[in-house]
Length: 287
Ligand code: 48H
Image 1: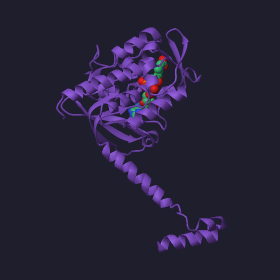
Image 2: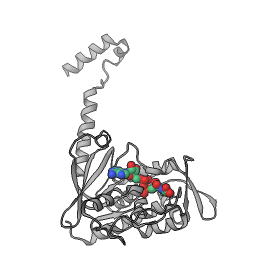
Image 3: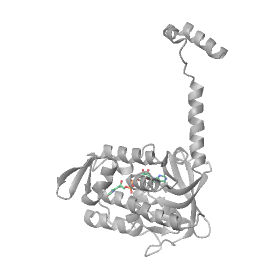
Image 4: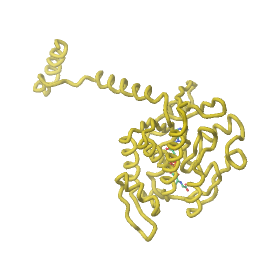
């Protein structure tokens, strides 16, 4: 109390404008820092054992997280970049609109994102509104999103994914020799987009043992929206025990075409992976 008062007097002398504020609460820079550090550490510790760990906060990862949290699952998303939303912000060639089809319109509408019919079966949404809606609703449902953290490896025990290995993206970018930390999960989702990074890590570390035709990553095929949007939902499945693929990663791993700036398939894929995982975690004894 004495300290507070003398601080106020000091400020009042140095900055006359503060004289009026003398009796008011003063802002303490150290309290601000302490609040951030403590609260982040609490969140991080809370996430050390998860039901579901998702790599990638693009549209597929965000909707998967949202649906899983709605089912009461403890879920966190680890995103390499500063921003969430993956490739959705830029719409098509930086024209920031996205197209979605009839079946997935209800998903955006549930999140409060507006859609407008363009032609029968084609709906438009503002890409910024779509990303904002996805991220906001996911967080509100209880998904913990950690941005600026990259998944650099996986933990495998007894031929099953049991966790993800994390590092700051800045460490990765600066190529610093800093060891990572690990978190545990009952199930992991590779929602890393075109690069399907988690499936790639598994293939690289233990060989061609994925549940694909070749055992390895089949690779994404050329643009074909009609087929790509269908296969992406079919390809959303478990690719290695405990590891599911969703979104663009599903077509990259199982060899489906790309589809350009139509995003219905990403949403349906995220929803499907959440449904599959929820069912599995309900029927299994907690590990
Ligand atoms: C942490 C990581 C890591 C890692 C990557 O690319 P995304 O938007 O992926 P989807 O599948 O949700 O959506 C795909 C869509 O955006 C798209 O690209 C389409 C429709 N393309 C069609 C076409 O023809 O091109 O998001 C993936 C996210 C990104 O934010 C990455 O930064 C992040 O995953 N990420 N995060 N650890 N190792 N790798």
